[in-house]
Length: 129
Image 1 (cartoon, rainbow, N blue to C red):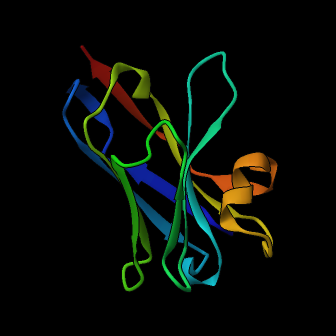
Image 2: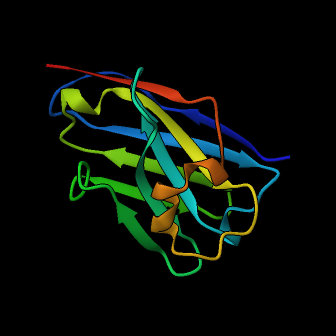
């Protein structure tokens, strides 16, 4: 059974940075895409970033492009998301995610198919102006 445990969230001033971590068990992160999503109460969960471990290809939502980095540690079976120059609109619950079954399309397509993913419990990020 796949388990994803996120950490690293918190309250930070606008312009600051955060590095979120995700410990993955029951699933080898190199076997398929990994992703980060976020959700604000009352809104749909949205994709933030994906990574294809086989070749390191990454994909980012426009809202965080050029100021975010998704990465992974194959030995620790962990996934990370760093966001720089944080903005108040980045405030959300952030979730690490992995496909429940083999995903054969581009990792970026997971943004449009959030229902195929297993999520962790999330870590809250609050950005104050």
